Length: 552
Image 1: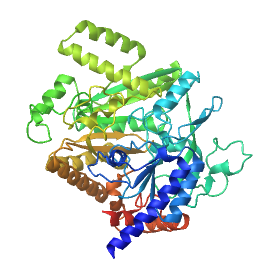
Image 2: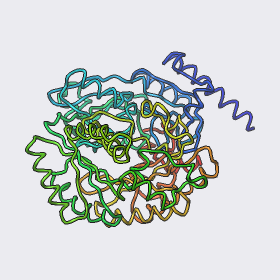
Image 3: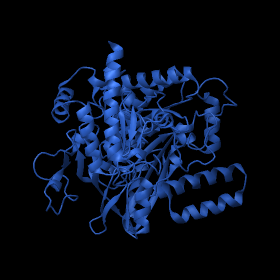
Image 4: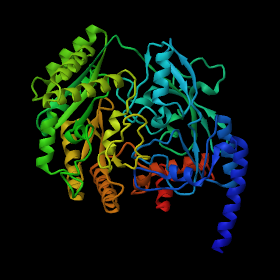
């Protein structure tokens, strides 16, 4: 009976794939071994093999593919560019699903330089939009993240990701989505369904129920286009780095900065990284000095930090506006930090030029190396704050990789392809120093127990909350270490949940853990899913805890 069932399934899939090849062309319906292996790669050490990969060119082809999938009861899993590092990469939640790779849909449909917005497709990358704006001479910047130049804007927005600039809370700067539903029908949200609408990408809510949120962190539709607001270039930008000399001091610094975030003095998203976050950005794990284990001995960690001038915590942010506005913000920041042990250094284009010159003059001395490293970091941050993506900040993903950073890094960095081990736990917590220390303590205990270095970043994602990113970096070539890494991730995930620090996004490997109690929220989500996708063909298990549990 099992063989007959498998045969029927294979025949059904064969007919579906043949029909899909007629839609996208045989060159864009792929099921060869190399392609399937590439799409099964994951930093999560959880290879999920797809049935095949379809690469549509436009929304009409996506709609046709979905209709075929519905007719044949074939599960499809959309990805924008498939670079969801640490959360699943290009893998589906369950094996045997058809990957809809939307990277060919890479048109910048429109840029309105007067009202400062763009309309883009899922394949548009951070580098592509940044280059386009510069080449066209538009005095506009697009917010970017540290995930690398080749990552998708829409892919990140669908996960409610955040960047660096005043527009860093990205979903708040989206207006008007085009969505392909499980029926194959195309939905325009906001005012977009009124063809005569003049403000479809200017006022996100439209009239009637606000639907856009249904299509983020969900499997209720495939977003094939959206409007994203752009930031007018600022007259003046200063970056600042704030060194915190002792671990416990970070609480006082966070509390001192919170009023400036609340009143709008600090408009950008501030990032607070521990010493391991900074250290891992400049080098790989010193295997020669630590032949056993995945955790730095305390004395070696302290020595490496001292040599690199790395404090226990570093706060990073940017000030935007006119010369007068930035000067006023600098003064406010200095006043706020005065009662704390922290000290802010301001980075400008001029200071970077002078620092680079001094670094060259100092040559190979320890101070010269330290200064050049700081200048390189400052230059990368300066670019990011002006909407120019940089792959440098992916370096931490390579911490435990055998061979360290590739020679071409950061160009075309791809942690999944490069066999990096990376898992993230991403709790949200109140913007209070005490909560930051509490979350860090909970995580550190588990990281120590499982034998890993804790990389911790806390970002002021809005005026009242911190988004944490707690990284488990591990050696994928060591099966025992990979198993410990997953155990560490799961233990930290559970502890955060139980302590009330719920993650803002999760990886495919953790979807089932989102609904421990079977509450009314997830029952409502399931009811909406059943109404919009009665056959459950769109990304089954994605932010669908009950279904994901059955796939484990």
